[in-house]
Length: 201
Length: 179
Ligand code: SF4
Image 1 (cartoon, chains in turn cyan, brown):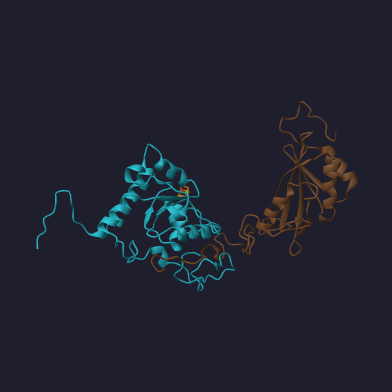
Image 2 (tube, helix red, strand yellow; image 1 turned 30 degrees about the horizontal axis):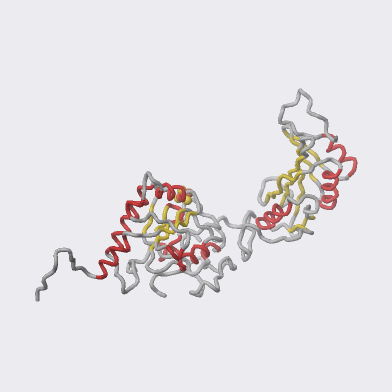
């Protein structure tokens, strides 16, 4: 049954429309803990200007953001803060891990530095570099926008859940931990087993 | 004034103070002094440590405590003691500097606190406690200052592994969409 449509009306899927809205107004939460944060600021400034991609509204309140950009190394004292901020952000939300440190710990393979934030929070895009150029971060945002457009839409949780991250698979065996942030046993006496599959604990 | 003004033949960076060493030697036993490139160092036994520091502050005008740090001599060639505490003093009136050292051995890692002499020692001693596990007797608030309170080790000790004992991995994992 054909329906006559006026010229200024477009038919689409509601999911596609919602994703299109989401991807073009990302509000970044700058979690800049180290030198990469300087490049993050440069990305937001006029020369590189991520306003061209609709992501210029940096907000320092996690309640207002839907894109967390972790720029810099995260130490074990900071990780509970990072997780709390991630939990405070509303769905749908995405995360970009910017730089070698946030993605893998970088050169800081010490007792205090978390070896990749993707061990403890979900990450959608990794930006290599030490620090990455602003162009690389912009490319990550563009790639993320494509991924959001392909995402599941408004009914389910967004983002890919099918491919587990490599670093998550390599996580050392930990005791059962509470899902809620309340009983966070970070820094408790070490109970990590030096298992075969864990990477240089 | 305990130290004379620099003689013109000495380099401008000479902060050595032989007069202070002489005064210390006359007052206390067991003081070893050495000098290297215009810097004076004295090694003080722990028993007289607090009295020496008070003497240096009150009678030798070392009114500023620049730093307190510690060295772990585990496996160090020729070392006789496990830990060496380093106190850097400066007299702002006469411009002389003095390094005071105390050696400690396990299990008796206790040294009197100098917070009562220099307030600056407060956080410095907390940092040494945090990183090396040296207890400062009489410190008003000897808590960890850099590491989380729950941390159990003292990571700058040489027998602590560089990559830790798994503290950096001991967190809950947040996953997407499970909530
Ligand atoms: S990746 Fe390089 S620039 Fe970025 S936080 Fe680490 S050390 Fe700094």
